[in-house]
Image 1 (tube, helix red, strand yellow):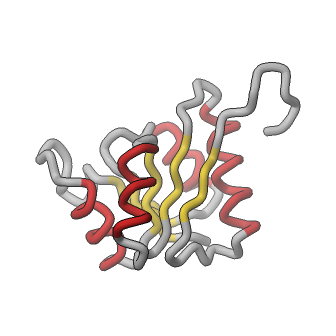
Image 2 (cartoon, helix red, strand yellow):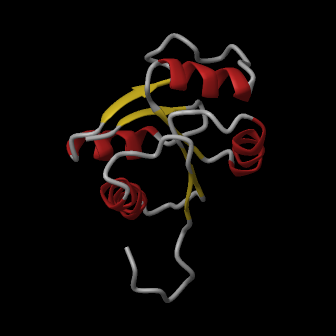
Length: 119
């Protein structure tokens, strides 16, 4: 499965579900990079050096980084969702559909509109 790197703002409960789905995830805390105010471009560079896809809720900054630093291992930007199981499954399905190869790509994982039946 995919090698992922979650930045500080990402929900750890989603990380746990993605691990159950066999994804290899390194968190900012586990990497020793938490609470250091590391600039987002350094987060992206660290993940790329590790061959990991960044997973974040920081939509605006990473969308810009993708434009300015187009060479990376992949970026998944998510809208926050209180239904962590559904969010984890949307990420998982996006990775499956991409066959775990998101090199130099930006993928958006959006929370469904109210009343939507999609996971």
